[in-house]
Length: 317
Image (cartoon, rainbow, N blue to C red; front, side):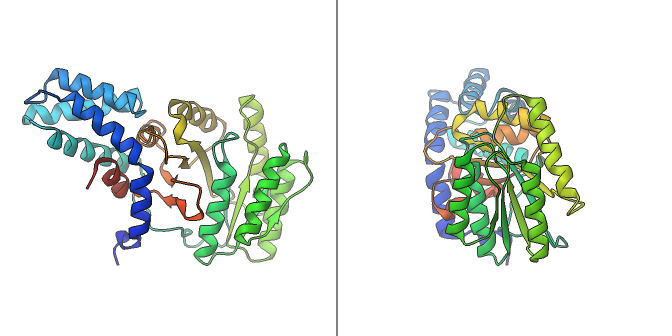
């Protein structure tokens, strides 16, 4: 079975629906950009540049895409929207491949890791705790023994929300009273998970950006304490970003990548927004693979990011 056999019709429909506003917005702008033009000239490229920037792809990534299209136009003259769209999708797919945002298969864990530790970071309100709950659901569905750690001890609602998700999914959670040391929670979670032969641990952390130095110190402390239980932990530092905030998500990514070694991204709330282009820009700018995308409130609406399906949904089959 090829990797795309894992991508069901239901998931494809969810992806198409989730990206529909972005697709409609981008296509309408591209149509206006080439209106009345018989070939791709400087004016069309200028208009296309504006389309991509206003679609939250980002300035640097947009300029990179435009330069690639210019090189192709020099060799041949593309005369209609359909052909220009075909070039765009090829270049964007290529860009995502270069940034290692390749097609995932499913919610599986790397081989050879008995206890895989994921530390989740991100500001309050981006869907961080919800993403953790959905991840726990997907991992459990895949047959994994999952533990949650409520290390966002500065906000009572965060612990309560994660407890609700643990109950919904049916996985154990380790927590302490509000105001407890987050590193202590992480240590207890890993110790308990290890003792009970867990497969994966997901640690929630405080969603604050009030002071980058404090954030860096806090996350570093959590990581150092976890290493006392699992020397390689955390295996994954997953940054959750709200796709509907567009360029604000870029700033959050900048802050968190400066504070800790983020090596995976989850971009949420792509349904109901026309800012889906932010996935392309953030992946390119930070050179960090997009691992998951959020397309709704349902348990099944967190999907493994698949480059091919994402580009197909964005630009049409």
